[in-house]
Image (cartoon, rainbow, N blue to C red; front, side):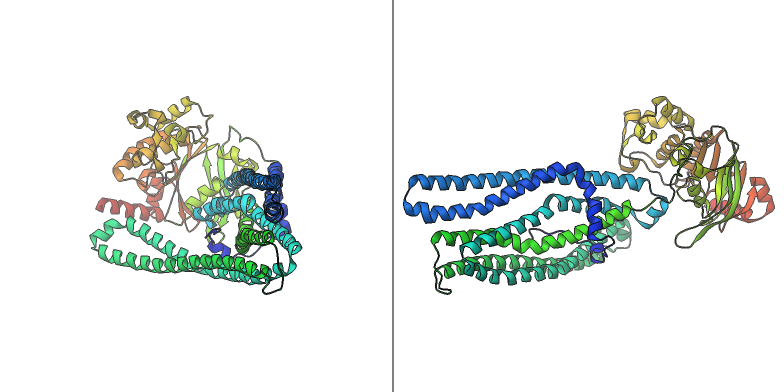
Length: 598
């Protein structure tokens, strides 16, 4: 199809949030930096349409007057004028596309930067509700659709309207009866085209649904090939995929048959319109006899307007989908962060402080789940505090609140006597080093990952951090050392090496507080024992908060907090808690026996 745009599932269920006037006001600032290109593009469009409208008029004069008079000079002048109009129209059309494409690309590039920058400032609660795939669709698909709207579709509609109105005006001036007959033929065709495109959208929606099913099936089964081979399920998997492919083939074949059949029918209608013009021009039906030049004028205009007019309804439908995209894009931009900086937030965190305190902190997730219930504890400077407990006890929620990914529902977190919300987010987070269970290494070199993409970090700080965690051997074995490019996700490193680099990255900036969230639980016990030596060097003399699944790794902590159902159930050293015979005692014995049995 000449002008097909993929309809997204959210387009079907779309309900307008902004009025057209409001949306226009929101879109207008995007145009302002590119207003000159828009004016140039629109002027070139008018020139292109004017040349296209003038061509058949010159052609009629050439046929009816110049050729009839036999004047070679007149014929040459008209032919030259016709050729000049063609060249001017083609050149104007080309430069119009260049200007508007530049404008569209400039707009969508600025919009993507704005979107990405805004997303980086949103709180974790937003990403809990919006998975990466959906956000990628917003940043890519919706923004690209707006680029098409700005650079192609909107002016294509304007061009079609101007060309149609200009054509109808010229044709009525030439002969209103023939023009009326052509319009009577064209209007039902346009109505049929609108109906056909609406019907085809449902058919293509089914094709895309079947395509998604096939893609999902292949992805899941390729990932599970060892299991398929183990249970001898290969033949059954092939049968299921063949059935899905057959359904998709039938739907695609049907869609292609209807689509190309329709365009063939439309071509036939265009030929029929030309035949009607010739028949009417002969005077046999309406008693109107027109000149050969006028007949050619009618035929030329009909052929130039027919297809754009047929596509007009689909262009309008695209604009509706573009407005839906615009609404969704501005929906993101209008989403405020739940962890904003206060108006007069402090630009720096005190270098000297005594304790970090959770003061009667409660937290409830949007779904109503209460993760923390009046949690109170403190971490003294230089102290190593461990958080342990069964899954869902609230350990990770504590670190998320401490990092200000979420704000407490009740209570506060304070540094000495200051609520941490009094500091700017950037200033507060710059004082914290974080190592997660899930290691994320960015595309780029080892040095770029250790700098956390901050080019201002000196090499000496990177080397110091590598020495602290004992990762010199990792760097030494890489052919290019710190400049070694990392494969996607750091797959050219072992799990232990990736974890060592994440340790080093956490201490490059020499943070006041270090948070380790299950930092060694994703590796095997042998590697964990090696990493534990790095962790011990890492934490030496540092204030740290350690979330641990394997309790044997935190027995040396200054204090251990046992989280249970969102509350601090127990607190003390390993020996104190074990002697108490409570939750910690049971967890430790259970884990120790499981590991001993393993």
